[in-house]
Image (cartoon, rainbow, N blue to C red; front, side, top):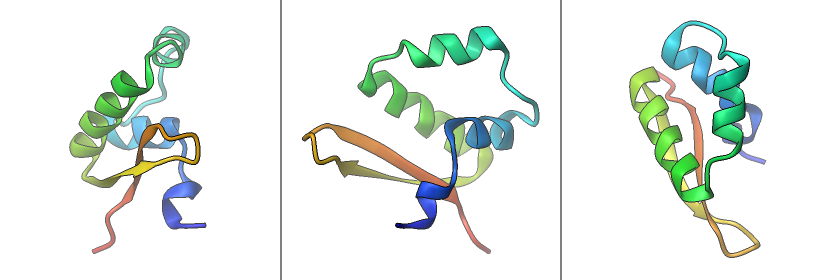
Length: 71
């Protein structure tokens, strides 16, 4: 298991926005398509200064993995 498996979407959100997400933000994220979720993750990661990598899951879908960049 890589380091990117150690972080949740909400860890990334807090790193990007310096606050916890609202219940509404959690709900809206939960109903996104996988493509939209990947795009959102990339935006949050850019804002947080985290790294991303697209990967194909065992189901054949594209997922964006993310984790902090080590300095």
